[in-house]
Amino acid sequence: MIKNLALVFVGGGLGSSLRYLLSDYLNKSNSIPYGTLIANISGSFLIGIILGLTLKNDILSTNTTLFITIGFCGGYTTFSSFAYENYLFLKNDEFWLFALYTIGSIALGIAAVFAGIWISRTI
Image (cartoon, rainbow, N blue to C red; front, side, top):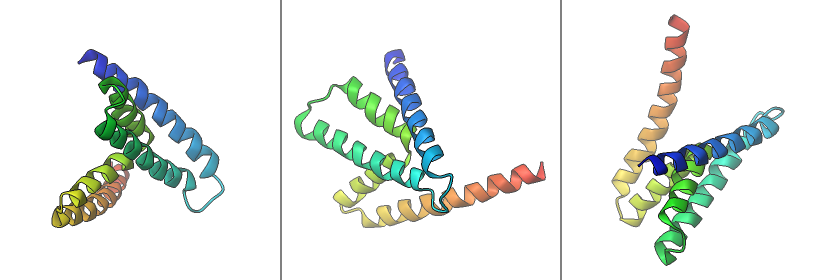
């Protein structure tokens, strides 16, 4: 358990650092946060590749998969996990769960940002 936690911790730190650098470089002079968009899309692509290869060929160790997917991709972007979970809903023909999860995640996420801003302003 401690080894797994360390793998996630180090991978997450690396992913978060890369996301920060990418966003810092690309988001400064643009109205659209291209750095974040690139991190979300490339992180989703990476988690798809890694999990796809692991499921198909079992070519990566559990430790490597944990480090890259939960750690690095989780730190680089939480969107990659969200995208993969939606893929699973669609793969399993769970269209209502896909719609509920997608709409709920986006709507509740945006609402949570507004709520956090509102709470922070009232304190």
